[in-house]
Image (cartoon, rainbow, N blue to C red):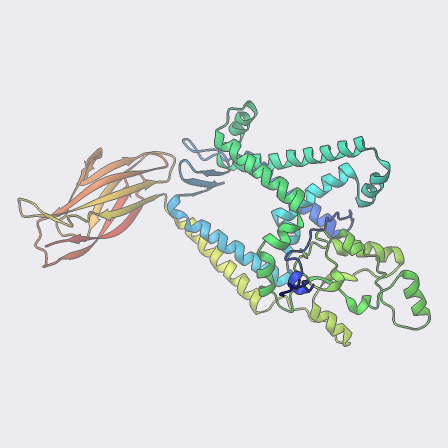
Amino acid sequence: MNVATKVQPVQGEDDAPLYEARRKIYPIAVHGTFRRIKWTLLLITLGIYYLTPFLRWDRGPNAPSQAVLVDLVNGRFYFFFIEIWPQEIYYVTGLLILAALTLFLMNAVAGRLWCGYLCPQTVWTDLFQAIERMVEGDPRQRREKLKTASKAQRAFETVSKHFLWLMLAWWTGGAWVLYFADAPTLTMQLLKGQAPLVAYLWIGILTFTTYIFAGHMREQVCTYMCPWPRIQAALTDEYAYNVTYRYDRGEPRGSLKKTEALKLQGLPAGDCVDCRQCVAACPTGVDIRLGSQLACVQCGLCIDACDTVMNKVGRPTGLIAYDTEMNVQRRVEGLPPVHKFIRARTVLYAALIVVIGGVMVAALATRGSEGVAVIHDRNPLFVRLSDGSIRNAYTLRLVNKQSMPRRFAIAVEGVPDAKVDITGAVSTVEDGRPVVEVGPDQTYEVRVLVSTHARLPANASLDVTFHITDVAGGEMSSAPDHFKGP
C-alpha cells in the first residue's frame, strides 16, 4: 500500500520577504546650523517657485508681460529678456547638461548636497513634517496623546493636518499651471471656476502626487524610487565630503556614566553617549554611526542633533560632521587629514560648466532676431520652361522674432543671372528684389521660384544661398541649398 508522506517546508533564505516592511518614521525637531540652512533654502526655493509666475517683464507690444512663461499655444519659452523658439530647443538641452554637470560637481565636493537641501522631495517633505509637528506635536507628544488625549481631539488634529497638507499640495499644483498662462488672469479664472479644464486636471494630478509623495511616501521616494543615490555612489571618490560619524572619536560608545567611569579607570572611552538622537532626527531613519548608507540624504540634521547633545554633556562638537572616510582612517593611524577640493574631476566638471555656459551665453548674445529655412521641391527637382530657362522651386520659412512687423527682401546667391519670383504670397519688388512682410513674433511661409537662362553643366547641382534682409534695419539671415539642372 502506498503511503503519502507530507513534506514540511524548511524555513530559510528562500522564505524571506522580498521587500522590507515599511517603518513609520517621525523625526524630531532639531535646532542648529544645518537646520537654519535648510529653513533658509526652503524659504528661498519655495518663494521662487510660488512667486515667479507673478513677476512682470515689459517686452513691448504684442508680447506677453509675464517674466517666466511657457507658451505652449504659440511655441515659445520666455525667461525675462530671453525668448526661446521651438527650433532653439538646443538651449534647453544645454541647460539640462549644465544642470547635470552642476549636480556632478556638487557630488564631487560634498556628496548629496542636492538631496539634502534642494531636491523638491526633500523641501516639500520637510514642510509637510513641519505642519505635522505644528498640529500634532513632536513624536514624544504624539505618544503621550495616544494615552491621554480623547478620540475627538486626535481626530480633529488628524483632519486638520491632512487639510493643511491638501491645501499646500493644491497650491503647489496651482502654482505649476501658472507658468503656462498669464498668472493673474488664470488665478482669477480659477477662483471664478472659469479656467480651462486642462488647468483643473493638472492641478488635481499635482495635488495628488504632492500629497502622496511628501505626506505619505516621504523617505520611500528617496530610498526606492529615485535613481540618483545609485548614480551618486558610482560618481563619488575618497575625497568627497559626506556626513560622517567620526568613529575615531566616538568609539567605544556607551552611556555618559559608563564612559566617564571608563575614563576614570584609564580605559578607552569614546565621546558617543549612545543617545540615538542622530537616529531620531534623521528624516529617513538612518543610523549614521553604521557608515554611509543608500537611504542617507545627507541633510546634516544628525549633525545638529549630535552637537546639541555634545554641548549638554560638555564634550567637543563635531562628532558627526562633513568629513571623509579616508580622513577618519588617517586619524586612527595618527596621520593628518587630507583635503583636496581641487582635483581632476572637480576641475573637469567646473571647466565643462564654464565652457558650455560660455558657448550658450555667446550664442544667445549673437543670435539674430530673424531667420530663414529653405526646402527644395523634390518632385520635380527642376523644370525646363518654354523659353529654355531652368527653374527650381523652393519653400522658404521666414522668421521674425521681434514684436513688430518687418519687411524682408529675398535674394539668391550662387546661380548666374538668377531671377527670383514669389508665388502664393503678398509681395512687392524693391531694387529688383521681392519683399515680403512678416508679422510680429511670427513665421511666414512663401514659395520661391528661381530660374536662369545661363548654360549649366550636365547634371548640374549648384550651391546656392538664400539671403533675407530687413529692409528697415539691414539685418540679414541666410540658408544654403542647391540648384539642380539637367
